Image 1 (cartoon, one colour):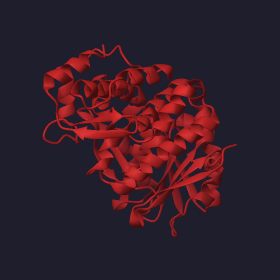
Image 2 (cartoon, rainbow, N blue to C red; image 1 turned 30 degrees about the vertical axis):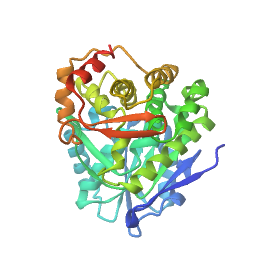
Image 3 (cartoon, helix red, strand yellow; image 1 turned 135 degrees about the vertical axis):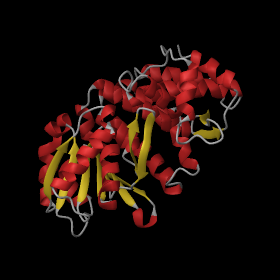
Image 4 (tube, rainbow, N blue to C red; image 1 turned 45 degrees about the vertical axis):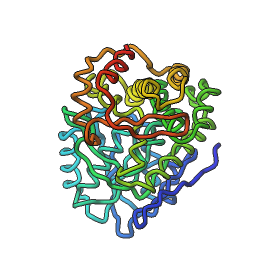
Length: 362
């Protein structure tokens, strides 16, 4: 059994802890400082997650003195829609969920983003606790207060920054994930190695089998390291005015890939993997990244069973999606890794160069 580690996001009155360890779901009552007048917890989750973990979560919330209302949402990226969000609002009204009550998001990144945005907008903002049960959510999306839904025109175009009361990352839940889901999460993990913590890459290179198989000790170390990087960056730059943009390594092209394949071909971490291959090749071509970075990127991702090739998209379509990205400023900017552990933001390169690198992903 892994020890529990607590990492802090420092944001003044909006500061909160991230607890990482095994068997934490049953300690929700003691790990979260619940709002003093909260009477109800609206748990937003999906069917499979609730079947696996619902009894433990419900018992812990009831020990905290909360009445539990479970709201199941569809699985998959398509659930981050205006239709699902509207359905959540109506359920909150029926409960009724009051301003002192709390939303508890139990699931992956889709559940966290959707529940967080519903909480941010209900009664002009109610508290939310993030309980991520996927690797991708534990190392990334549950931390930092980004919430939102997708439109057909792009991902996360409608949303809000709404920091949680706490993030409870129970690494024991990762053993229940399908192997593809775990591998996809490792794509997001690899990002941290390229932009901030090269030890993460060393772990993925030396123990890829343990990571993909769900070894709890390896995954706990990965989640701790990823959470620490994310917490530090968010503490410094809550609303992505500066350094937080570096967390988008691999995401500019990755989000375009997801949108252009209707969110049903690639998992988020798989699209990010292709985006990191793109970024490393672009960085080398521009003289920003050290020689060999692209080759190492492909080797690391191949070792984890993540896609590094086979993408055939018209560069014009990719540009169309990237130019609508909410982070675009004076053209499309890219995050590039100079070498493992360091990254920078660059202004839009020559379009023909980007097109060449996009075609290299085929």
